[in-house]
Length: 216
Image (cartoon, rainbow, N blue to C red):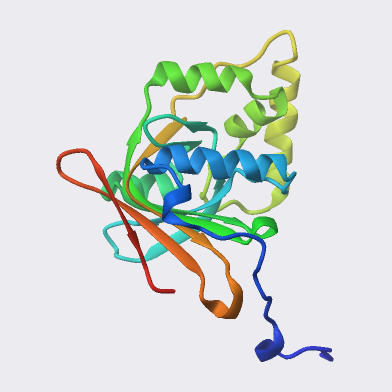
């Protein structure tokens, strides 16, 4: 394979913004909302996409991209509870998130503990999803091995005959929301010469946050 580049030549010089202690919020969730609003205003592609990393009893870390669907006491996302991520979280609720907003030369790293949200909240969100997304949640046994894609397509076809825009399905019992309640949030801003800005907020036992600058 012919390439017109080598890996050691792939680099960017970051210079859009700075991250200064005097200009950020004392509470990391407030600061996250500021950055998240700026990511949306910048029209970045899927600014709510985040990398979720889990580690079950087998001690094998796994990562995948999920979508942020709420900001409350923490970061809310929805999935199949019987998926690989659901099984890992049932064994070990500690997890990490990472947001990467390249258009703003920023990332946010988050650590915390994950809990299921109430079934009522999950059902309320499920009702807002497009019909195709609802049917997809019913058709897919997420993370299960299947012989081919036809299995999914046939199941979806059956469901489309059963449900319609006037007759939406109920939320399946195996599906719902989680919230990651943060204990550590780090904001990273790309800077020139690889001397990036890193501000880390750590939750103390008294419920207050400590902010520290980290060396890049």
